[in-house]
Image (cartoon, rainbow, N blue to C red):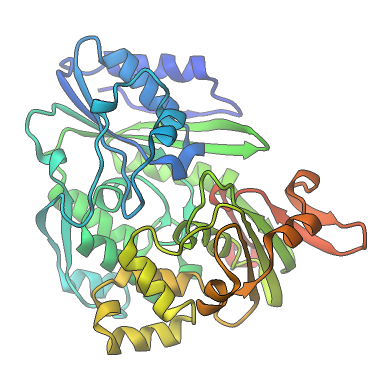
Length: 423
């Protein structure tokens, strides 16, 4: 079977379609039933939506094609979001919803001894490996996981087997992998490949997915203004493809700075970010660049909740973003948090650890709600008047009154950190 390892300043839609067509033509036996695993709307800039449309168009005349967005813990996509992501040509009954709490099958577990070894003894629990039962349906003769390789707070670099084990995974591996990463330390993992969490996923891929007819389509993209450019396309099964995609993403998606930033303003697109569970990428992706005693201001016109489901939303409201030391204490003391380790991990990731101030300007949450979870509050109208996204450019800006800020129009697209952290 053909592999694709393509890097370019711009891989246009025609070249993408041609490469995918050649890859499909190289399949030993034309598939009769295919399962596609793309990300949801929160990874809109991955080009995965376009890839799904191209694959569906190429395959559907002769094969049955099902699509299971790798939601993880996210809210299911609305009809409008599905149309924006996947176009209008795919019938609605070909799209399925992943339920991470109820729709999974247990394959086995990553041993506690292995987890202890890769975490340096910080965590020593076994991790149960569960994936959506649809992936185990023997009638599928091709399963294609599609997604973007980009710096990520939980695993270091997103995608590859993470798209299966988290995006299509169950409670145990989602909760425990998130907590493993948080306990090990986000700053030691962001933008890197061989992290403890990635090693857990590699173990699980090798031991539990080997017999699946699984292939990966990995993208590397860059976005400037409204235009997203595909710069890397890596297709196949071998892990070396992921390693090459990581290197390409590190080259294109890391914004490494000489000096810490005093004030950062981040805009969260209301169509993409409706919860702090997602919106706190503004924190994760800038935390390694912001100076002590600095400030992060988050413009969040679409923000209406904290968690992506009711249980996690209630936990965030109850405990708040109070720093890793306090959250680790609470995990030992409180059963509800102990039983939802991904929520605990998120609370650790979303804190500044007391180093800098985090101010939210939300569209649909009150001052009391924002302050309840340990963030500062700024009225959205006031924030948008002072920091108007239409007048700001990505990077350094000087306002009319002389204030200097660093502006980020979408925190999901990269990682901002000091050069000294990557030497």
